[in-house]
Structures are given as structure tokens and as C-alpha cells.
View 1 (tube, rainbow, N blue to C red):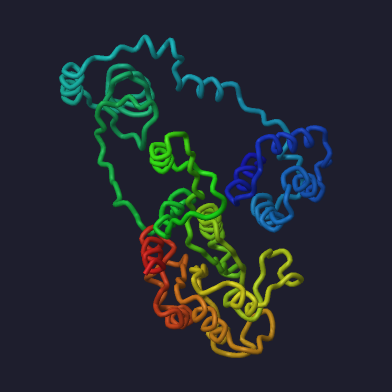
View 2: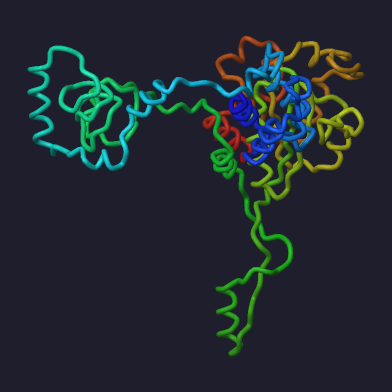
Length: 391
């Protein structure tokens, strides 16, 4: 149960380490939680969560993993496993010495013997060394071991020793609609590059140094500023609500963009940008940034990338007061138009599959406002978006 809890936390992108997990187990062994679920909750949160930004995710994982649990007694009591079960489990695996004693037949003999077995065998076999079967040392079958065998009826690799696989295996085309991962996102973002030399002259210009030295007759070291990607990017991220299902995708894009661009700023909004944006979600009601300040501060040569599913009530876009969280004096479309006008090189990345966009009115409205420059957050979509930004 605790191992499932640990892996669920990691799957929810909470940065939990093995050391912290062992600290929790040590605390439980010392009975610090006294077998009470409420005490265990606070103990686990103290041991495993180091940043308050992860508290909400921790609560969701805890509620899912320990749903219905009233006491920790059954979870931490030592299980009594019959010795016979353990003995039979151990018998399914061979030691390294036993593996070395199993000889390979060789290619020709392997197939010749297989033809003989197919002609002679009339029933299922298990655990042997001759017939086509399971869990043995025969070169034919599944879930056993042989240094050179033909795999028949096994769902995947175990020892990576099969010379043939006698099963129908279905393979799928590579899917260009899956999330990219941070590394591949970086590769896609590199289409958005325009290098320029900026900053202090601190990089050796070898060609110019050789040319100047030859001309003057003594060593004349020439330096130039380092080359950086001169493209400037603003990233606007929709958070909360339906975007909770796409947090991992947004995080990977955010991480990749921060490392790729020297001139980079990000802002958060919910559903639709209005008169206020913010930089920290946990302080979004106390520390906001007027959207007009963003428009006035950043020049129009910035590329703007909006990330959101654009799934909301159409009123949030079309009507004053349409925001679900506050009374907005001006409609969301007014603020979108202002942003798109100030940053004409803008794109919108939508984590929803492209074929579903037509079923949501608000997505159609946003697409029209941005001049149909909405792209799916996929390998192909990100590539198309970067091409659009470079035009």
C-alpha cells in the first residue's frame, strides 16, 4: 500500500525521493502515527512534501490511495505468507549456475527438433526440458529459460534470448498526437531560433584572431559577444478547471521554453485573459499584473504563445461579467484582441485533440479571434506553430 502511495505521488509529478520515502517508513516503524489515518496524513505530508505548491496534488493522491481506510493496522501488520507459496515461487526461476547448464542447440538442430516436437506432441506440458511448454528449460514455449529458443505464446520479452517469436504481434504506427516530453519539446522549439551576438565580448573569434595576428605580426586576440537566440517569447498559460487534466503537458512545455529562450516571460490566466494576469498561482489574488502593463511593457516583436484548452462558457469570451471568478468590466474577447493586436505573431496551443475542437463553441470563438492560428499540443502541432511564428 505504501509503495503504491509512493509511486502515485511520483506519477502526480510530486518530487518525492526514495530517502523521503524511507524516512516515512522509519517514522511508521517508530509508531509516530499511532495507527490513526489522520495522524498518518500529517506525518506523510511532513515527510514527503517539501514545497507548499504540491499540497493540493498530495491531498488528491492521498484521498485516492487511502480511500475508505479507517486504521493503519492492516497496512503495517506483517503478512503471513505460507512457506509452500514462497517455495513454489522460487522454483520458477533458475540460478545463474543452472542457466549455464542449459545448452543451446544451434540454429539447424533447433528448427529440426521443433518439427519433430510438433509432430509428436499431443498435450500441454509445463516445467520440462523437452516439449513445447511453459516455465521450463525447453527451447520451445513461454515463461521459462533457454539460451537459444523459439518463443511461443508469451506476451513479451523476459530473458531476451529468443531467436524467433512464433506469435502474431500487432504493431501500431508511430503516433504524432502523443505528448512530446520535455526533451522533444525543446527540439521542436528550436525551430523558433534567430541567433545574434549580444552582451560582453568574451568569446574567442578564432578566424579574426588569426587574420589580425598575421596582419600585425604579433598575437592580436579578438573577442566577440556570445551568440544567443534573439527570439523573444511570452508564454500565457491557462490554469485551473478543465486544464487540471493537462497539467503535465503544460509543465513540460513551460520547462522546455524556459531553457530554450534567453528572452522569456510567462503569465497565468484562467480560461480567458482579462484585465489581470499573474506570475504565481498561489498568490494570484494578492499579486496580479495589469494586462495593460504587459501590453505596454513588451514590444510587438515578442512572440506570444497561449496554452489552454479554450473550453469555457461562450459568455466568458463575449460578455462583460462573463468571467466565472470575478466581474470583468470588459468582455474576454476585448482583451484577447488587444493582446493579439500588440503581439501579431501569436499562436494558441490546445492540449485537446484537434478533431474535438468543433464540438466546443468557445474553441471556435478563440480560433476566429486569433486568426485560426490554433494548433494542437502534439509533435505535428508544435512544429506547425513554430513555423507560423517565424513567418
